[in-house]
View 1 (cartoon, rainbow, N blue to C red):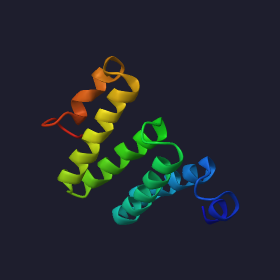
View 2: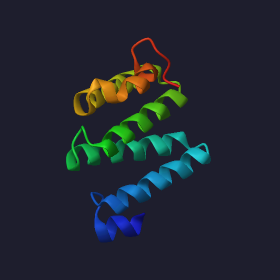
View 3: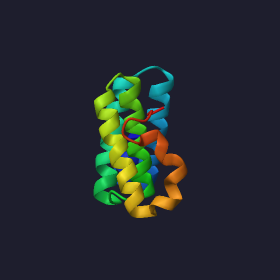
View 4: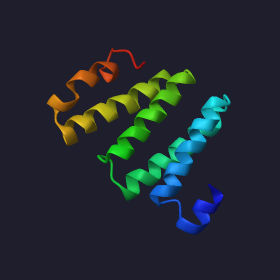
Length: 111
């Protein structure tokens, strides 16, 4: 990943993909804080480069919400999950995500 950052920059899609792979490795190793930090960095970059409504940004938002939930940070998880749902509804339309909305609905389960 350091090579990708140095050669391609943190804003390049290949670098972001490498970061996602590292996040997955951190999760597998139980290093949730490292995963959270990297996911947050990715989310900030995606919002700047791709925009809030881009599918990669929405995916990373959902992943970070899941990380928050696994760490017991339910409030952060819910806030971010609700943002994912609202943005998805705005971008994709309610009909396309209706089947997925139950997981992120206020008062619903985030799992």
